[in-house]
Length: 179
Image (cartoon, rainbow, N blue to C red):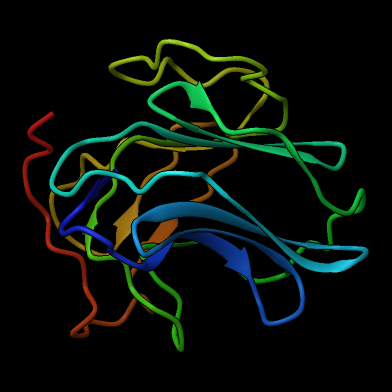
């Protein structure tokens, strides 16, 4: 992802309602993963803010109650949250959710996995590899226009960009990734 400005706040990815789900966000430039668990909503911050106008590889890992955030392959200290996730019934949103802050910046190459991909510091790939059996969804954002993004996994989870599929002021602005 690439924040447009320093100290940007907004939702990067969310599959949540007010009571259940998860949300990966920026809060004053710092990545935070919110999870609805058996002990309520729990937030885990990365200790540093992302640089403005620079592409940054961001990964969030949930592993049986332990959470880590990785920025450019460097792990945060693991944090413990509730062991049972409460999953939302709603769809995945990229870049914002109605009633909450929209992301000022760009998102590219997103993968959601059913397995833990990172347990220690790593070198981020320049481009995500092809989906595998543990890929729940993967989007390359190569469409260039519109409010949907195709899922490269066999699961067919088309992503919605902005608040809805209807044309609106919150529609994404497509451009070259410049990575």
